[in-house]
Image (cartoon, rainbow, N blue to C red):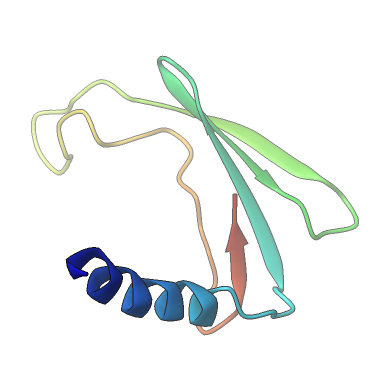
Length: 82
């Protein structure tokens, strides 16, 4: 009985999150062992690039988080992420 009380609200939220929308951009992200690959798919020209971790600098960087090619996404638009 306890599982039913947990499952019903979760199923409702899952249904609401799966609403159909027309995304402006689709971003496909693939994690490799030492880098990330990104693909923007909803353009006439298929854009893809790799993002590698850079060496930590003395100042103005986040250790083990800064990369050479950052992903930029627009605000206030529908985005599908894969």
